[in-house]
Length: 462
Image (tube, rainbow, N blue to C red; front, side, top):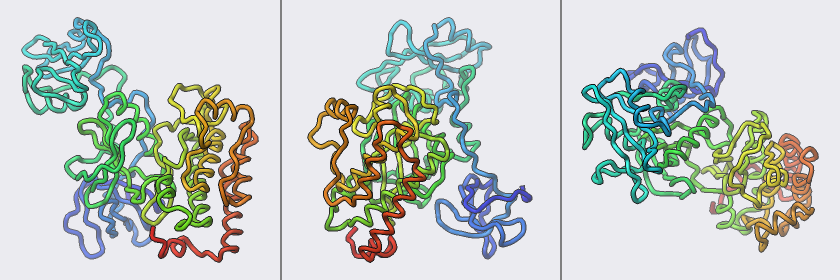
């Protein structure tokens, strides 16, 4: 390992504890995530930054392993013990040879919507019906759970009203345990190190909380529903591969009573609310262009990875403490395969070919980016004001395009229009859009005498 050469910026995982560092060395624990800052200071050593504490110091290169990206694997399961719709006799066959505490969960055939916990004990298999009641699950009408993951975790530690604690899951053939894979690759975080704070948002699939993880302020997306959590696991595997200054950074995942996705905290919230609450008196055109460029750079990086976001909008762009905008919410991100996929579409932001034929590509993201530009330069107004969704679909398909927002620089409105070309191939790449925006930023900066981002924001009240 000491011979391996890693570039600055590489994330790695500590292989053991180092509690008593010498001068210049970094203290760390096994499993801590560290980022390499410099590889040239001392042979066989790296200067690293601790991702949680922010402290820097030397570490022996043999004491860390690279933090691997998770492979997008459809067989990666939060519930490898869930066998779907199988009969009671089939469950008994699967739990052979009999072993105390060996278990699986199946869908109930006799009672659709309910589940059955099947447990091997004293040479036989006991079947416990899991009833779905008041949006919760229960076996005995005494102990209630949000989901199956929560229930299995409880009965793995407590015997409760069942014959034995759950000791060993009978894994469905072909599945891989998400917990094992996350732990192996360094992305599994420990719930005991997390302190949840106030609720800072409610999404369609769960709440988002501010929190603290080992001294670092974080955002925590909590997903309690089994099926949704499984879908978001795919989002997480995509995020482990991505590292860019204009994408919200994934810190890791916690598996506890569902799925917790832990990211860096973006203190100034989403871009649409940021603009609406500040307005023209606080945010000028140069600042708006900076936001537009930030998003363009993040999307250009996704484009280079052949990834499609599919839900690009100002509500899914977050603003950091230093006023850098970062693209978030990769819940719909997919490989750029241009394959149909039935999803609930954000009509006002979705390209005509995606609405009509469900053809998603980087070019449909470019269309959405044009709408996001309109949102930015209208200071967070709802696109296609006073138009119904049905009207938007019909009129856009017929060639209608929104007028320029008030006081929008003509060059920026021209960019919106080329993003909204009817034929996807005629729309620019994000790389080309970035070039045009940089030129526009330079022109505006000369006009207004603006300086760097730090100068722009000083005294702005933001």
